[in-house]
Image 1: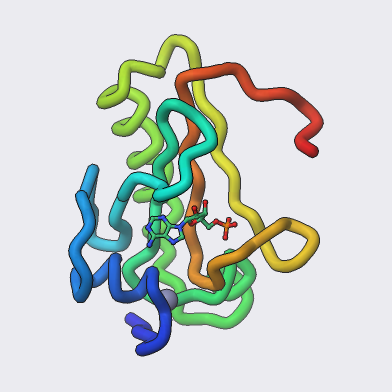
Image 2: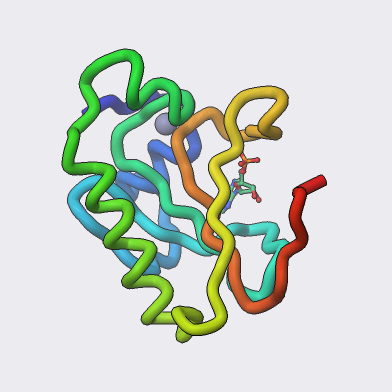
Length: 120
Ligand code: AMP
Ligand code: ZN
């Protein structure tokens, strides 16, 4: 478990600063995105600090159960928000070309409208 003192998502995921918690597992916390781009826009944030998804696979220390836990969260959120039928979009922005702005692993869960493809 890694904690970075100057990381906002470390503080949120480890409850050092308050946030409305939508769901929580051993490894992740789910909150609402403060700048939603869809009627439902959640962030699934790892409790441990990883700079990006690359950090999980490449630099060791990753809990191998995390992937399964994450897929479980997606199903659970789909049920909770009644979007299992219509569907949803998940996004992991990674580094500069991916448009990542917060350098702590998080997965966007967006639903409640249709999304285009390819993304802009
Ligand atoms: P990304 O561009 O993939 O790194 O996404 C970062 C996301 O985090 C953006 O959609 C922001 O709106 C969101 N965000 C940043 N700070 C907070 C915060 N304190 N609480 C909730 N959402 C946040
Ligand atoms: Zn962090």
